[in-house]
Amino acid sequence: MLPVWRSHRGPNEVAASDSGRCGVRREIRRWLTGLADALFPLICRDCGRFFAHADGAGHSPLTQGETIVPGFQTAMAGHFCPACRQRWTPVTSPLCSRCGQVFKSRAGDDHLCGRCLEEPGAFNRARALGVYEGSLRTAIQALKFKGVATLADPLGRLLLAGFRQYWPTGDIDIVAPVPLHRRRFRQRGFNQAYLLIRGWDLPAGSVVLRDLLVRRRATAPQTGLDRRQRRMNLKAAFAPRRPGQATGKRVLLVDDVLTTGATADACARALLQDGAARVDLLTLARAM
Image (cartoon, rainbow, N blue to C red; front, top):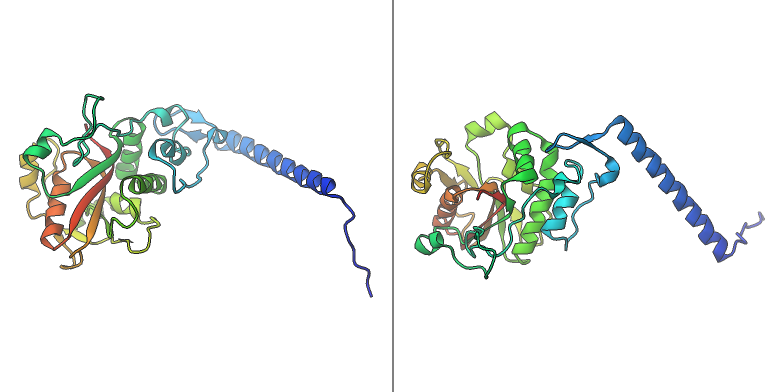
């Protein structure tokens, strides 16, 4: 019979050995990070300056309880330098309790804005993570107009953190992107709103539907139009792809930027006419 080998090292010796291996691994990681900085330095998408991987350029996922403000630092670490990761303005109270419009006065509680008191529209509630400026605007434009697909995942994880912050578990049945017209889809090659939500890990009972709505006709650009003109421009532009799919469901529409809310309102009207119980909206940013 072969002898059985047993270690005669005490617990202190084992701990010292493990600590030594951890130290070696740290040194290896430090050496590899230094090599990456030398050979492949990161370039900030906002200011254009080089920055080091050691400045926090990892891609660790946002945790379940991580809030939006520190979450932006985590999500954008591989795309913006530490200084530019500070160059964004989160949407915070006081704001309109319906449309999410930020009030200029920073005193007081959330309440309905004048526009929502006069003409509330079809969607129930809208929320955005930040103001459409600074590094957040740069990131959205890079994804939307330059096709920087690597931004879809971190922006989507950031948006998911916002979803968890504003909507309690079990409050939403369907998450769906605001659709593009097929002509615009062919030009761009993707719907940025869907890219943001395609990897979401939703609780049981909630589902992401890529084609809940269809944009039936191409519309004129909304730029330069006032709210009434935007509404007329979008009249009957959206319809459910499969009638009855939203019946009795609480729907969350997702888009990149909220401006006047005319597009979200047109989508919400189409879903409510199809029998949806409620339609909310979540965007990465909102124009001020």
